[in-house]
Length: 127
Length: 108
Image 1 (tube, rainbow over the protein chains, first blue to last red):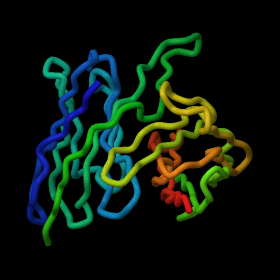
Image 2: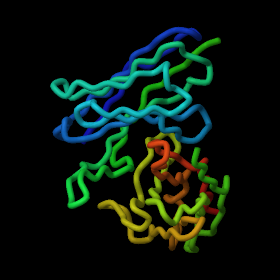
Image 3: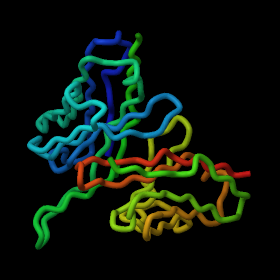
Image 4: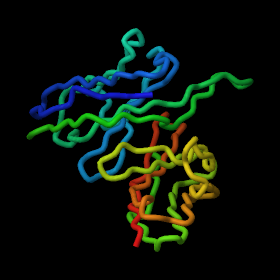
């Protein structure tokens, strides 16, 4: 399994950037995906989740209304559209894969942890 | 929002046992996951569902969770275990995933 992020770079505050994550070595459409970021010298921050077909999406409060997660299963790709960028959005952005969910007697079970990570793409927002 | 608290740093001598804690309100009712991150590298899952190890993770890594504290224990610590360790849970009330602030493990 390989996850490769791209699209990072230097952008001015208020600008936009679109990140991509391309998956290989797995059936991408079977897996729920996430974006997690890490500011320089800081800890990990989960920022967004998307279900296998994109019908369920969640965002951290810090990015809600500014960032949009999406996916294209035909292209084995995950995206993060980032608008109205702020200096505090400066970070290394990782895509992270959930384990495969499954159905049991209670319905669909979604494991809530990150089984695989990419190496990240760096976003720098200048003020 | 749900808050996880970790000690910023833990130090241990080689061959000894390191214990890293993760505190949260009634965390024992949640599934806790742990990640190891070495400098310049992506995080790696070392414990999921409180106590389970992914394939390839040594038995020296174990987890526990009860009451208001979860723990990651690393026995027979060696220099290769020096890293930042993060706990993580899912907060069902917000549908958000939450990380602790991270603990830097130093092998003396």
